[in-house]
Length: 326
Ligand code: FES
Image 1 (cartoon, protein in one colour):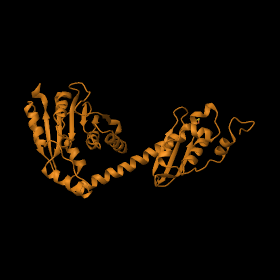
Image 2 (tube, protein in one colour; image 1 turned 180 degrees about the vertical axis):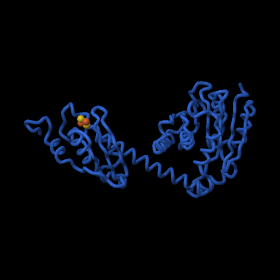
Image 3 (spheres, helix red, strand yellow; image 1 turned 90 degrees about the horizontal axis):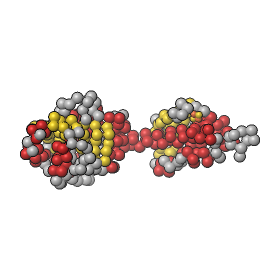
Image 4 (cartoon, protein in one colour; image 1 turned 180 degrees about the horizontal axis):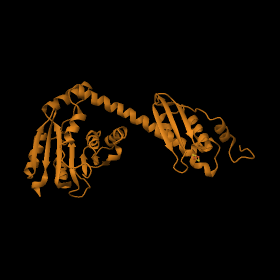
């Protein structure tokens, strides 16, 4: 119901004068700071999450009465809600919960919702990252350090990070894309699996390297890039998953500049043994359906490329220069 002298509903005024759940949460599960570009106001949001449910939503508003009232209502709507339902909250629901707000204040209702969604994204990223770290730890226990292996691979590129166009094929969880980004390269990173790309993007976000990586959903056997588009092409631990990698290798050669480098790595015998043990420890089988890396080296040599093979800790790295094929 409207106060006779006010353009605001009683509910709006109540939330403005007595905002609920104001404050901060120590060690929050999700955090966000979001602003409204229309007016420059911003809010900070802290979330506590247990058993897939938001158990607390605290906030601080640095802005107008509209931002205070709407964020207060969002906190009430969010607390006690399952995560999958909380994601579906909209600013329309917030406006309805206040019994309406004046047209010129409609944009204020976006802040609380935006804060909620961004804090939830922060939570999801942290959760995924935790799983990612557990996996890396498992491999490390078996003597395979993926991060160091990828950094070593990237050092084999001679192109300058400032200007080189790089392509990472079969990015999986994004280990190689992250290594390229750590070295300052911008890269396009492709994978046929949307799930893997989602996971890889979360990792890039977590490490704040997402601005350097363009994740794209592609079948590596049918890339849509122009011929000779890239100065460097990299692929790690993909070959043993491909029953016939030849269409992928053909695409690598097609999109690589004649002066560029293709670097492909896959497990050595020792690497395969380590992966088998690591997977078995989790009750899984490490799937190996494809070619061995030595066969790939021969394939490129037959195409008149210069191929150098380097044995690393658990892997064999091929450095391929296609210049002889032009
Ligand atoms: Fe800035 Fe309301 S005027 S959020």
